[in-house]
Length: 382
Image (cartoon, rainbow, N blue to C red; front, side, top):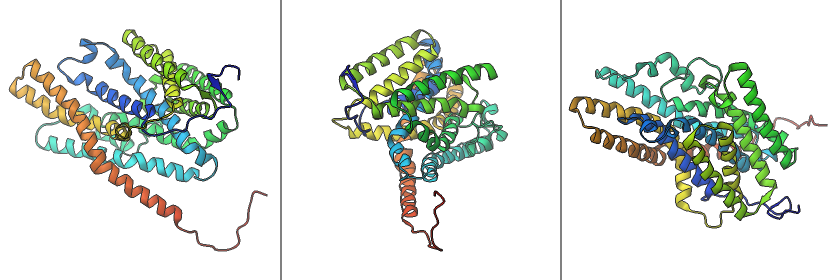
């Protein structure tokens, strides 16, 4: 191409740990914690600082879903596309990555609610802990039109939606691998815009405001967008300096825009540019700290709501009984946010990582296990 800052001839950088993509995952997970905790203080942060603390939640979720499609495409796309990993193995690996932690957090909440109710300290908002809502959430089916899933560990709807995306991943991969990078980029953008119009027409909602019950249909276009950005990054080289400038300018523009009002489609474009730029910058000096923080981001996401419910369940009782002043209440709020990080770190080190190590060992032994030969193999492919 004539413009040397963007080329289809240069070799694009491989996805690597310890770089900007990892940093972004930790930053977004931290902002999600802040969003979930913002209303737990004496006065919601959205009222005393800026509404971005309230309205930014759906944008952070958008980032999480786009980034998931992007990273999975770059990490697993080559092996799944080449047939080195089957669709079933890919789904099993991804499902087992998210479900054990989700199940444990659900069980912790059940024990917490039962124990506190037995002690005479029931939830302040019992409507968020209705038992008929629990089955769909525990089975991660709440994002597929199944009744239930409200309350409890409510943010897990996005994990439920991603399970459907994992199932669709191999088939979406086949389609994208047959297309050129610019065609893929145009196609995924057009698909999102069409999905946005379709949900407006059918349900009266834009894609990003679809109810949790239909979370899969909210997540899928964003996940596909992330996959398309990954295909583009793999095949189109972008000069690192240009990528860095685009990433920084997009990040600044994103926060400046959201401080004033909600501009969903513009924000989505800026999020896409941030991810695209982060993936195009080579990781020349990988940071082990950034890598570890990124790995911890899933634990931050899956535990923070449970931590919030447990911590402020106790804190609110203390505030009421001791008539704590506002300054002390803000101190408890800060402590609660800190606890969200501490619990996530402990859960990652003591629970999630050991479970995942055992699962990885089991999956490897399962792949190495020879299949019994029962007769001659006959090909059906002609």
